[in-house]
Image (cartoon, rainbow over all chains, first blue to last red; front, side):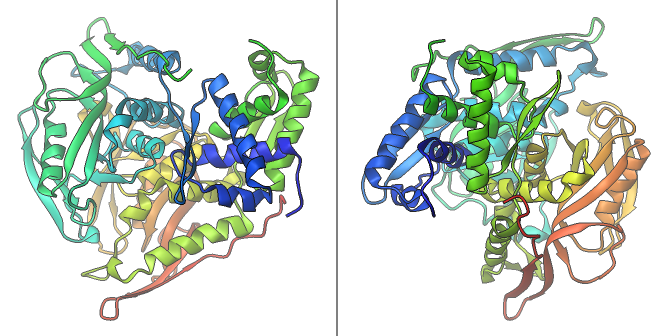
Length: 276
Length: 276
């Protein structure tokens, strides 16, 4: 490949790194792709890193050694995270979202990839230390959010089903009691989904009493894995203690008033930006 | 904001454009963000465009006028598309994917965002001329793929349910006959999902006789919209004509042999790269 100007190389380098968050790409791959020396690549990477950090757009991490390389980590914290949650709060407060029964219509936000890709980065930043091997959710509404969390972590996604499907082979099923409506439900997962001893991060869109998250936890335990964290977009303020012990919510729903059509919801404070 | 070097600006510019495919961003936004003149920004954008095209990583489109701006379009065609389909083919041919009953285990590939994000770009490239307003799928396995198609198009995603949910408000339900097993099933969609006269692109992971796609089509028609295209990842070779007339498959499954555990599947030829 003919030599290109430095700016053009930087553009392509940025595109390739940003397109595959968390993926370790070897220095040799880039050297061959651009036909440049390692020293030149190192200079380029420092510039990319400096620029991303300057504009708080994430960072580049270098792993030394034979199996080493570089990867882009899309950290989103502090003001850049809080602004996203404020936007979700504002949209959820729109009066026409209140559905008979005191429910809140959230699907359009949950299916909006602009929002979910940013929420995915926020969840990744919050749970980065737990180092999950898999991201798990249960069908249906939480799936797009979980897809984006899996993308930000660069880890495989696993989806538990409400029934077992013949097209997925043998599966493990559990029964669980939904914490709020006290109904017995079934949840199943194909045996191929999670190898034993896996560390699993649970992601869901909504938590009331925590029964569903608890069901997912049981399913993971049945398969010999460990739940290292539970993240939900919205949790209700009451009941206070949830069946599932440890969880983290990005927004807390204090209440929905069907008569006045007001929604009392607030984002949870984001830790300040330590990277910047 | 203090002035930064050109290369650093280019990195941030690339990141911001690539992160929001198809989103029209005003030139003024970038001028203010970087504190630069419009002429400088135009030069920067030409370089970004030249570089992306040089490495076949997509292109930048400029829309003139007051409501104008620039956007990144993640076209993926020709060899860059075919290589992705070849990879999917190879993975689907692994012998341990054959499930009793002659089914093919596909979930891990369908939930792998590396694959689905690239497939999303391929579908976008193929259906770009149809200009859909919404991307629609039915739960569950096709959702991550549809999320990525919606991302590549920068259009909202709509998910039809197998049952109607109280938390989504009033909905329209239809009954349809699955083309292959001849069973009657229900599919429903909340009335809020699609405004009348919308142009809808259907996306699903698998098509046998086309009954499910036909069901989605009926649902869209019920809501006053039009289906402008149907894209599936894998379609079976038999039955030949599908209930739904016009569709496009990325791979064709000729057959699964349960005894020898061989999977006969092939990618559909990709049009050569006209952009490059």
